[in-house]
Length: 588
Image (cartoon, rainbow, N blue to C red; front, side, top):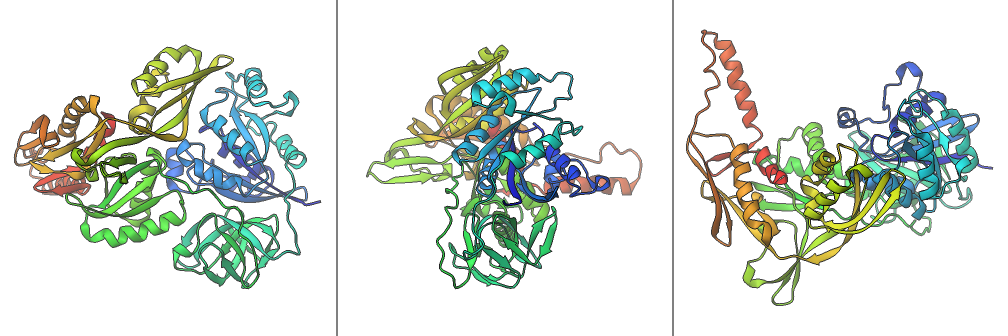
């Protein structure tokens, strides 16, 4: 009998995954209690600041003669690919549900991901120590809607540790042991990686067959990359070296490779010189949202490319290709899984690599059928062909699920319909309701989440997945700032909304662009025809006006502060445009 159990924790955001992982680390004495800080496995500074898990985090725990390999996963829909990759490395999952909130949208999505991967799913109700916990009601939701047996549901408090030991024991009984063979040649799946300046590319692997020892020669089947395993080991959660990794284990290999493209997530790594067939790997992930990324300083473009290569090694869902904007210069057109994913990538590039960046207005990828029958993809509105050469435009739609309490079903329905959605069905879960709908992705990436939280007093959750492409009568709105076209502010919008969007756009830009030493005209145009206009009067902000004394030091400090604020602006013609202006269109 194998002494290894591999599992992941899945849950909707804020249901307590990382806190449960903390209790496992404490009970197994993997991390001494005095060193255990909250959300210990969230290692990125961004994760701690935002209070959410962004990256999957593996750790090896030893308890009562068994080895538990845990992968903590993100709960936000934008990072569902991290969850998907984790599932290929484990045999079972804990589906964690908050006792005060019950089943939510991402709970359902994660459950279906796990069952499609044919993994053993163990249900656990968390936060049972809270006064407003509805344990029986949540248990009934799990039994009635997801088919769990009443006696198979664990009840825990990740905060106090109540019931967590019983859950850990339950993992031994319910999660299957890993399958594989010692005697077969080494074969492992790469499920994540990162770049270390001393170790080169470090690959996170799950060993399915055989074993790999330090200094053995290995090969990546997909890329053809060959190297020596400089060192191998497991996660404590820090990188701990050991002599070998064997079948069933989760660990890491330091490759020494400096060419990051030679190690790709989803690839199979084997012993060099041995015949081996690749593991199934992963389906290709397709971005949902596109935006231009441009360095404020044009000389920083090579640094941006280098930084993107290294971030992509650690985030396989990120895609990018070079782009040249007449207004913003050289940059890249990047693809993201959603708006939060885009924000996180921008912050990582700026913090980890010291870059100052401007992100253009996000958009989706349209399919355009030209009059000559040619089909092209358009993820940059400025590249949309003229009306005369376009026969049809198709936009991406998604299938969505809104989960909320019954109280807010009226306002939620109104909001969903206002976003051009089709409501397919409703299902009731006790005092909750699931609304199944189809809607354009372009409506989702704007202010949909914010408005959904607003109309439901924060109680509704939303999850979605790609559906198909459907025809839309759309036009391109061009934006002119001081008579200069700014391609990065162009938008593709439904024709019936064009006038409203154009009017709202110039108003938002008026609020976002600071007054400068000359008057600035703002115009929205369709096919050369102006549909809306605003003006920003000339003004020089004297930041030292409030200083009546002769303190030169204080005056210099204020002038420096003003200069720092300008660093996140981009010169377009004579006008300095701040980052906020490019994102203002999201709030239209």
